[in-house]
Length: 92
Image (cartoon, rainbow, N blue to C red; front, side):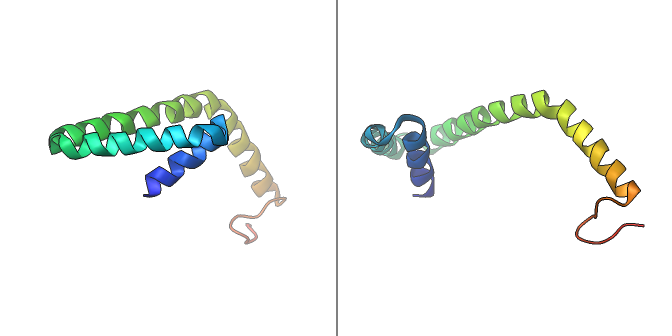
């Protein structure tokens, strides 16, 4: 039920309220199919789609890595200068 809700909210955000009933219909159809195929195939399909979800995250991490390194260096420099705190505590 949780995945259904998350998917519904995502579809609403991306495509608007008119797309939600189509999503629900597809979701119910997939549930029916999933109940009628072998458990091994369900697990394999689930693993595959979970892997697909990782792809945009890996691309974003790769593209943003230079910015993260620069921001980390800036932060650490501010901590050394005493202009920043770590975990709400002063660093000496």
